[in-house]
Length: 224
Image 1: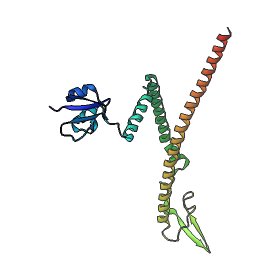
Image 2: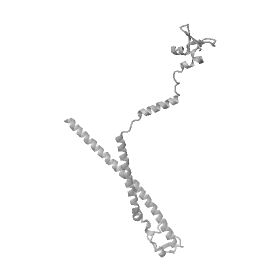
Image 3: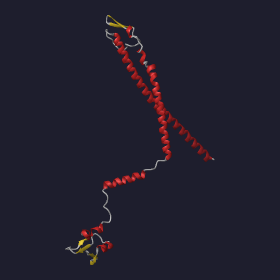
Image 4: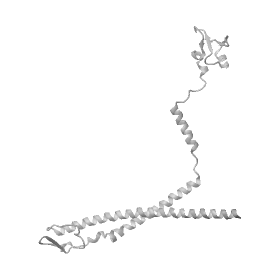
């Protein structure tokens, strides 16, 4: 068993065992001597006594400490969501989704209006191109038997006028079909925006009226 001597108030005390020094709670700078040492030494510099001064783990690194502090702040700021707010939010999402579905139906139903009515994309489907003929007189070209405005914006050649007419009709139908799809999609977006806008405007007006009525009622009650 190793024995230790300490210097206290300029006096030598001891010998003490390790357990006795532990009970005395000596300081790190207490001069101590034990067999094997050449001179009095600070207690913290003696390996056999190092365990006396390990009372707590070292402080956390600053970066890690900041992380823990931020986590603690966030956890304090977090508040449980009111169940009533959850129900209101869920109902709002459900209603808006139903309105979007309604707008989608409007967009789908608008397609035949654009395709068959406004743009009349298939107007050349049943055209008889065999009766089309072309004549050149001087420096001008005249086309006979062409349905509607088929050649408007086109300058046909003198050869294979029927094939040219079929190709132009096909291109026109493709272009008008694309315009019908585009117009239907725009109708869908505009419908969805207007429906949701009108809904929230009506809700806002209702809230203003309700709040105003409550204030008037409270003022009347206070007057009484």
